[in-house]
Length: 247
Image (tube, rainbow, N blue to C red):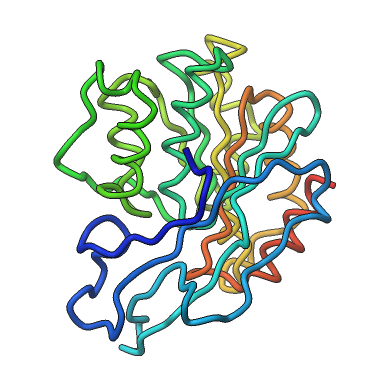
């Protein structure tokens, strides 16, 4: 899966946002590429043929955004990082990691993000289907969207506990060991980071505090999934932050 670029053209998944009001409603999904350095990450040029996400902003202006040239797999400190643009793609890579034995069911998820991403999709992947990565891929791209991919993983018991870190207080809570009793399985932890946690409106939260918590959880995690969220943060800034933290 993710072996070649494709487009979502139907009124499904992320393409369903304002589908009937967009001039040419289709979204580009890039192929997965394995790289050895964060310097190899490239962004898509602003080409209307490769819109990654499109939706009205708070000023009722349609925003066309462009994300990563590829989805990326990177080895970091003897573990895998999967870097995506739209956040629902991480759902597939969690199940890919389970298939490889990197994580198992009942994982602990640390979700560091400006948003909760816990809307209910109302349709869930059945346990037998979750063993079939082709079905997981189709569910990820043609049903889920950037707001609703965590609840299905909880319903299917891939994730048994989610820690939401979306504020300065949550960062302090983490540093004060508030969540330590949750780490009952030391090797079954997912870090799910959205780089929109570094968008300018959240600059009142100390940058170094964010970085310290992210790196601490990264060192505990068995797999790391990271999203660049082109609709919510400038992509050059997102990649700059990513390289500063992990490189």
